[in-house]
Image (cartoon, rainbow, N blue to C red; front, side, top):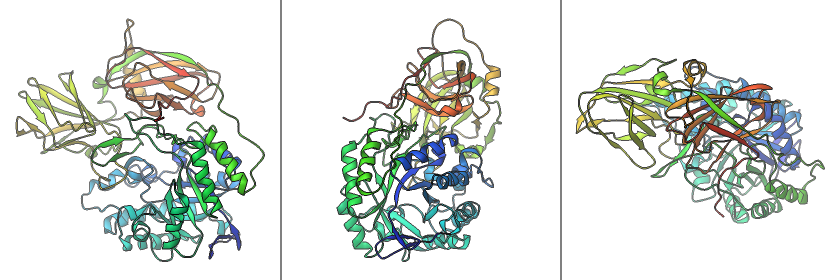
Amino acid sequence: MTSFAIGERDFLLDGEPFRILSGAIHYFRVHPDSWADRIRKARLMGLNTIETYVAWNEHAPSPGVFRTDGGLDLGRFLDLVAAEGMRAIVRPGPYICAEWDNGGLPAWLFTDPTIGVRSSEPGYLAAVDAFMDQLLPIVVQRQATRGGPVILLQIENEYGAFGSDKAYLQHLVDVAKRAGVDVPLFTCDQPFGTMIEDGSLPGLHKTGTFGSRANERLAFLRDRQPTGPLMCAEFWNGWFDNWGTHHHTTDAAGAAAELDALLSAGASVNIYMFHGGTNFGFTNGANDKGIYEPTITSYDYDAPLAEDGFPTDKYFAFRDVIAKHFPVPAEVPERRPVAPQDAVELTESVPLLDVAWLGSSARVVAGEVPAAEVTEQYRGFFLYEKALTHGGVLSFAEVRDRAQFFLDGFPLGTLSRELGERSIAIPREGLLQVLVEDQGRVNYGPRIGESKGLAGPALLDGAEVLDWSIRPVDLSPLGQFRQAASKLHGSGGVAGPSMSFGSFTADGPGDRYLRLEGWTKGNAFINGFNLGRYWSRGPQRTLYVPGPLIRQGVNELAILELHGSATRLVNFIAAPDLGPDEK
């Protein structure tokens, strides 16, 4: 068995100084058949450790459920880290931020308005305990002290930027120790103000999060922690993108110089991200600092290993820096090959409003317009309905996050949270249908845990509209939509909202890049797997299709288009296109 400890100036592995050279890979953002490849490429860059968050809301999508199947098999991921001869750092939250939906906190938890958020409120702590009781045994049996790869476990996540509830932090420490965690516990916070002190406790090793001015940040950290190894637990070498902005990039040489400064100072490092992966499905988060900004599907992060797992110029620049300080394997991973190119025609389609009722039942909620969570579906789309006896101006307290309005099936317009829109003209009486898209829950700041859907009161010419019907739009079983679809005629585009289908053949598995030129907004599916959201506003112009999703022979492509397309074709192109950068 192995010992791992905090020394006066170093991490100590079996009593010997050990420098952590870590890279972040979120297993839940990567197809599980690609885990081994990504881990191996981290080792080939010179890293010796893999760090991952744990997304509570993925493992527990509804109350009483705890999943570890498929892409949520954390144990298998950690075993693959060990098989590559590497160490592991686990950051189980319960809050993770990570530009992930709700910062990893389950939306169902906050349907009880008395539940606290990231605090020692008893209801919140009880839910955290239930989660940790199921999660931590997976980690405990894989600690270095028991022959596994795990050398560090994080308590909370940048908590000093949120609060200073010491009882809450102590509770998390006690839960970890009761579960059998005996590797060192640590916290990470930004080296500004009192964040490091507020976000930690005596006895927990403190680390910093930053992406520049390494020597200055390390000096700040040393001032707050006179002994122990210095570590940047999140070395920000790139950034994430929001819809409607440019694609963020950082200069490879500049980022490599900052990494060199960190290593020259004797610090340990975790590169955030080494490999970003993808916000598949409806998993992306959002920020709201007065303006709501949802995160795009790609979590490429301009990381050393790109979204599709191929090395970038930054990868080789970082590898050269690490080689100045530590041995690096001689083997070098291959650059991205040209992917198969093809055009796929969508041949069948069904209007979404005609089949939105499939697989779900409507619920009439008495009183004020309800939040989407009453459906017990916590992501995606929701359909509100109300028979109106007259027209007028309809307004809401807030729309979360994007609502398309239809009267007797005819589109009236769209209200967007991003634009602060809250009212729409209703021309006459009729059946009002409102298709609401949850574009991603806020992952940072005071709006964590807020509800989705239409926020009341709903007022029609000043009088409240009560007793709405609401149903979830369940997109998981595409078969029901396929059965209802009919052949497209003519040569025009596709009207929305609709679900359309086409097929293509392939020689076998292999990465592809799906470009939806001429389409407006929606989600794309390959063989039933939700690749994530597309949007013509960009910056992202292609969706990454993980190679393992492609089958030999016939494959199915499905497109949920919310507005309408100018074409029935989509294209697989040679390489990813994440949009124009800021240069």
